[in-house]
View 1 (spheres, rainbow, N blue to C red):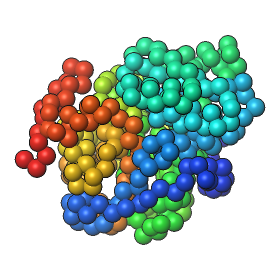
View 2: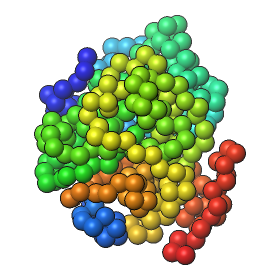
View 3: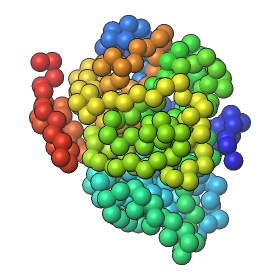
View 4: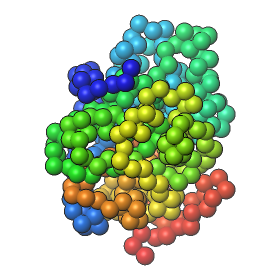
Length: 333
C-alpha cells in the first residue's frame, strides 16, 4: 500500500490539466532573513485555492465506480474532494467539525457537495464519514492516510526538484502528514540528502506528539490561526505516520504569536493572502527555530481563510482563539 516514486509520477498524469504546476517564486525579504535564497511554492494559486486538489483528484479518479465519496476534512481537503467529485458526476458528502471556519464550509457547499457538521473535533467528523461508508456505500477518501492522496500531494515534490534541483532545505506544513509524506517521498527519492522539516503549531500538533510517542496518539483539538493543521492522524493510521517517521529529518513547532507575525510578513513583504497554516515554515525561520542551509523552499498551501480574522491579523488587532488571546501588534513596530 505504501506509495513509491512511480505512483507520484502516475498521479502527475492523472491531475495534469486541472491541478497544474504552480509558481515557485523567491521571497526577497525572507531570503535576507535566511541568509540565502528562500522560495515560496504557491499552492494557493490552485483552482480551489489549496494544494489539496492534487490528492483529491488522484483519489477520486480511483473511486469513479463508487456510489459517491465522503471524507473528514478541516476544509481544504473537502473542497478538493467536492471539486473532483463534481467533475466526475459523483455524490460527495464532506464531514467537518464545528471548529472549521464558515468560509471553508461555504466554499464546499458552493461546489455542490453535501456538508455534515459533526461535533467539535475531527474524530467526531471522522466517525460520521465511517458511518456513511458502512450505511450508504460511499467510498472514503482520507485527507492524509490514503496512498492515492499521498501520491497526489507528492507531485509538488516532483515540481520542486525539477525547478530547483539545488534545493537543500524544504519546510513543509505538517498536520495529518499526507502532504509531508508525499512531498518528502518524491523529493528525497530524487535527492536523498535533501533536508526536509515538518512544521506545525504548538497546540494540538497530532503528528508531532505521535512521532514523539512512537505511535499514533490522540490530542485535544483547539482553535488556531493554523486551523488547517488541526485534527488527529487516526489511531489506525496505516501510511502517513510511518512515512513521516522515516522521511522527515525533524519536526518543529511554532507558537500562535509566531504564526501571527509570519502572516503579516507574507502579506506586507510578499503581498500574499494566505492561511495561517501556510506560514508555519516562515514562522520557524523568523523565530530562529530553523536555520536554513542553502537554497530553501516552503509551501504556501492555501488561501481559503476567514477574511475577518485575516484582516484582524494584518491590521495588528487582538485575535481571540478559544481561551487564548493573541495581543495585536502593528506590522513594522
